[in-house]
Length: 439
Ligand code: DLL
Image (cartoon, rainbow, N blue to C red; front, side, top):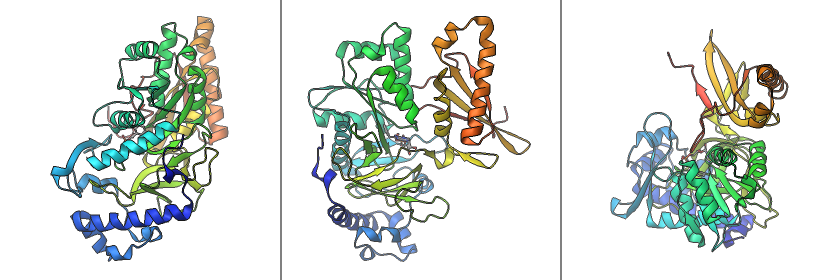
């Protein structure tokens, strides 16, 4: 269901709205955030240079490094007395990045999260099981507020305690489940262990994101749980989940909430803006945020964008599925590859389960990669124990062959027993980088 008029604006109407909101945002950061005032001054830009959304390219980029340098409260644009909430991003190294929200920001975020949930048929009176982690991570609370805003009955389960999640799904009979794709897969597998048929639950829709996943993973989840799975994107620096969401009608790209967040795609090396359809780094500018507006934030996420009217009736710019992060890209003997492309190849082999890890090491100054992937439990159990090892070797050879022919990379593959890859309760750890450890 389309919740808001801004989801169906024409391009010129949207640009008019974005232009006035961008003017306000630039004015605001210039006046209230010393970091941005200095940065704009260094670029010899004053707020009057930014009149329409087409002037956005004059503005400098903001990087994660700069957010860290201003840790914790350096980028706030309003007095502390008007801030109602802090979250922090899930950085893996060094200081986290802190983000602040005013009550108005929370209201806007709830609205866009509500819009996102309604793209997966969330409605008043239906039940939403929220298995995203609650806490500093924005997944839990972001979708929680959106679900309540829609009038849904919201179950704040958070991540972990998988058996209890399953009990609650059986007892409360939710129609929508939210969580990382890897964790919801974990829930589905556990149902099978417990003798529960995951296809026979009340669930109809899944809202999955916070980590890269592939079309094959979508098919696996849809098939295992007999649901429709939709991709949700967001990042704490920009607001949290709901920056973009895929509609269940088309399941083909994510609608960007572009009345609040202006999206661009740039070449991460030259920083030039790329035309529609070309793959590069996503850059977002907040247009309505109060507590911590952000200008041309380089997300590190790789995707493309296009503007076209969708079969669902929305006209907003759509972004493709995120292929991966600039910093997760592996360069294996000169070939660039994202873990999600490896996943795509692995999941086409029917005897393999969607549980895998990629180990990167360095030998004689060359990066080497090993993929470990689990065998499907039923194939494993049906195979005579004497023949198993042989079969696992043959499948591993097929993995190596497919990765070589489809992704042009040479990797070592090992097929391992079911349940030997660690399971996630939130974002899955797909890459284990051993290049810089000395153990
Ligand atoms: O992951 C917000 C979120 C929560 C999004 C729940 C969706 C659902 P952060 O912890 O700040 O925020 O991490 C943001 O996660 O820059 C991407 O690299 C990755 N990411 C988020 N959504 C997707 C997605 C939340 N749908 C970082 N596909 C982002 C691929 C995603 N990667």
